Length: 219
Image 1: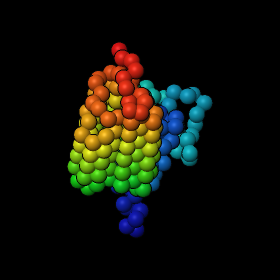
Image 2: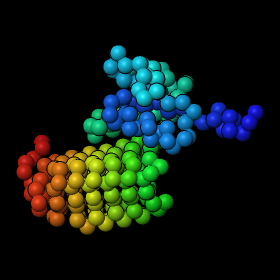
Image 3: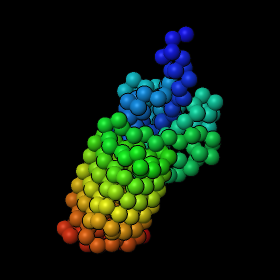
Image 4: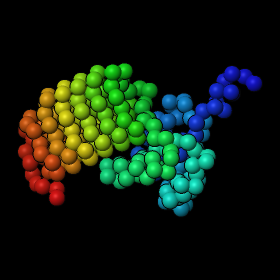
């Protein structure tokens, strides 16, 4: 048997939960990585049978019955809390949860990227950053050296973190925002689009503006 065919047969299969925009990006990145024998989706849109050439083989609740066919699964949801809940469910069901990293991103080999994290095209992650589980590093964002992103953090397109920034669990840094060096952004907060953060931000608040100011509490 030719070596390339043998290698293909030994590759794992990937199940992607969610066939919306986030799921389509995840599927393309997985395809470009070239390390999956097959890729398929689950989604609750009953009329959806395929996504970008990949089959939709059932609804989200069908995941438990597919463990014998798929060794790996990925939760592709833009909502941070929902994504983390699905990662927990998939892990409990025995799936391996990969990180999906676009080949045209730049991720230092001295960076740790957690399970279930999606790194999109043009993202840059510099040495000694630590990216938690279930994160999203969106298109052309940057995470500088020694940053710490806890689980479920979303860094939106074109957002930039200076060196040594810490971002708490489930926080969302929106499109085009920037965070100065060595600041702490609390858990469950939202940094609004275009904001410039120059001081620490506590948990569970919305901060916006240049410079960013707290606009309201989220809980």
